[in-house]
Length: 105
Image (tube, rainbow, N blue to C red):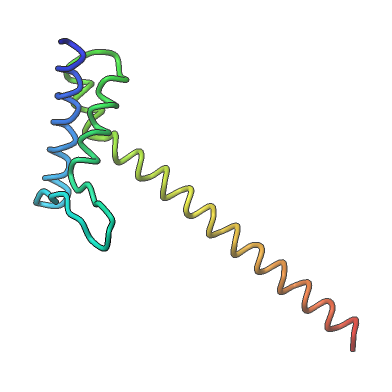
């Protein structure tokens, strides 16, 4: 029962964050055969993070509040790393093409 309460408190923290961040709650919906979870995704992650902290109601709430934000920043960093890698590869390819053109001429 105690773990369920921590999960709900973490969900509440994530829900409050969603309301303060966007000013509204995005309901789940289907679009083009894809299911978008809306606020349910972040509240589920908030609940899981609330369980992972040191088993205090306050830290579960705060972890739920920041939990999805940390998850988003990790995903954004990963995407930026992938983009910078692609740009670096394309620059290396362009340099190799330029060097080969100089050799051929």
